[in-house]
Image (cartoon, rainbow over all chains, first blue to last red):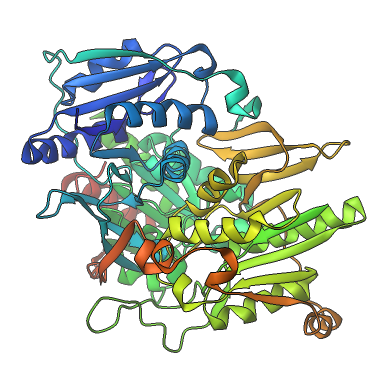
Length: 329
Length: 265
């Protein structure tokens, strides 16, 4: 059976939002192509997530399960997905461009010799019905339209927060295909011995809807507290420029830019960031950009929708209070 | 330890990147090239491991045009022992799959205990070559490693992998392909004696025939994906500068605009 597949990545028993974004867009492609839209859940106990995948348009949901898939491992999930692809022969497979989505899709591409485009911001079909995608390169300094060779499935991972998500329709009941994955512990080849949580329940920067970022103008690690407070009020998370990371003020996983993370939040608030070309590339596709900086000549103001030329240490705490008031209304 | 490091030469992050006038290629004229930042961490980790173990060889493997030699020499000047350069026009203009395939074929015949690479290249941002290479060589792969520790028997490694909201600790049997990320180490600069020595180190060019692949399996012909058009992102115009007599007033005005106009909070 042909079909357009969406890999429904899940965390803590919930399907990630990016999967719903992709399902929404892929539904249109499936209709154009006249093929079913299917979701794929992989894990040790995933059936409870079927309704949410169905609510965003999947007609059929594969539940690929076995005990040793209880946590994500590259080889375990790759084997489970490759076996299913070979058996069911979908025409297109789409992933969220999360850490594990990028990990899994690349290894599947290697194992089955399939074309894969990473971190796409647009997905469509060409005249022949093949996948065609739009993706940033050089952290967003240029974009590329990418086509695929005549080989199926064509695969792409899609950046979180870019595609709009449809209203879920809970009345839909998808067909459920239960698959016992033929994966044994020895197929996994390595062992995850520990998971150290640092970010708590917060999403990754690449998936965050609001980012409050600080640069050299923060003057020291202790001052990030005021950004943390603003981020807390806005349900956002804190990012950093390369200068702040290189100074040792923030963890490198917080870095936004060409040699850090490329982000697409709804709102990006840059505090004390001048706006080097590498940083602008990494956050340039944010929907709304705010810059707070004392230097009116800072390049960031040329990209910002709203600029505040003033001392961030005076502006940010008041902004936090004002946002708190507005949120309470 | 025999350690291989896969290294890519990329445009400097300072570079402005533009397509050619027909939008089918990137215009690399006047652009400075450097070692991909993530690959620098890979080179550094390999050198540290060799120093710690006290014996072995660090071999750089690069696929790229003639100019990539400059970056290979830099890695040799940092302390790598020798290099292999997949230097044939047929290898170029491919995709992550054909690149990994050519690298795998070149590495297959080599002696190695471990392969380091960068978790991604900062030009095409594909996040693929390390995993595909590992798959083709039948090895485990872990990308985005922040910490690396070799076991006493040198048969496995404990690595920390960056994931959303934290890190995972994994035990990986060797050989494996490990993709470095920022935070793993602080790469050294090439020293002057290192630069002098690098000139005499072995740098072996590898042609298409040497790896036993045909032209339709690599480069543009073998690629499974192809860029048909490049474009520049839409230009962002500078927006409003928030008015106000005091910082407090500006902050209040900003919050109001974000709520009412931008509908962002």
